[in-house]
Length: 152
Image (cartoon, rainbow, N blue to C red; front, side, top):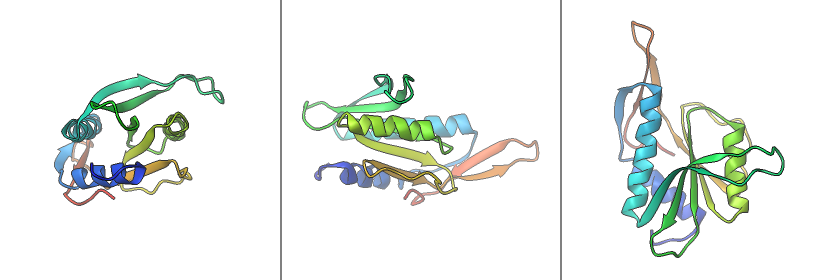
C-alpha cells in the first residue's frame, strides 16, 4: 500500500475484493471465501495474518471478543489492522472493532449482504460491503453469489 491510514486500507481491500467472484456457495463457504481472500490480500501487501485473535475484555461488556483477522506488517512498521467478516449486522462485531480502534488499530468491517447496515458506524471503523446475492434452490438450500465489482 502506498497510502497510509484507514481509508487507504479500505480502498485497497475493496479494489482487491472487486476482482473476486463466486457462484452458489453456502453461507459457511462464503465466510471462508472472504476470510481467505482478505488473508491473501494481506499477505500480498507484506502482512502476517492471525485468525481469531482475542481482544482484552471490553470494559463495557466484560466480554472477551475475538477478531476474525489481525494483520501485522512484516517490517514491524505501521499499525495493526483488525478485521471482522460478517453476513449480518452484529452490534458485537462493531463494538469489537471500535475497541480495536481505541487500541490504535486500523479497523475494517467486511460485511457480505445486499442489505444496508442499520447501525451507526463510528468514524474509526470503515465498512466494506460485499453485495452478495442470495437465492433459494428447489431443495430450499440457500446459495450465495458474488459478481466482480460488487464490493463498495
